[in-house]
Length: 171
Ligand code: ZN
Image 1: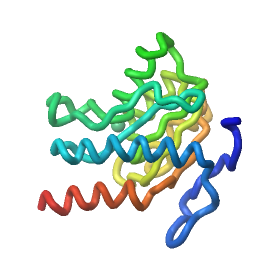
Image 2 (image 1 turned 90 degrees about the vertical axis):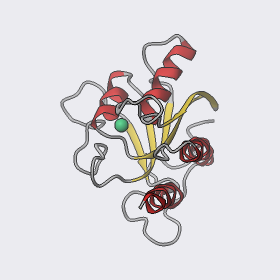
Image 3 (image 1 turned 180 degrees about the vertical axis):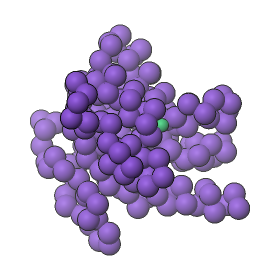
């Protein structure tokens, strides 16, 4: 029964108040990603979290580790994808949903396509580097051989506030 609910999330029209209904399992997945994001903030990492879910079970979760690893590529969703692939012993995640609190960048959007992630649910838009609708769209590029079903704006306010609070405290 994991196909219940609407395919589209809040989209861009969200703004104030509740956007159109989000499936219960998508809210649960985003909550798991938010838990990871909060753990990142506690460790001085930029608070972005991700979780990969298959048949209602989390098969990979991660938060940003760019500071701890001194690796600018150690983004939450990339690490979560790598962990999910390892946990499942698979080379594709077409039956999985990736939840991430922030719109993926070019690197991570590329990884999502390469790993053939079935669905992507993200929270806040990233107008500076987001490559899933903001400055470009790799995950739904018409000439790539894999296109991802995307739901955006899920718990966008909570996801965005974590980031804003983090950078405000840095200043
Ligand atoms: Zn990224």
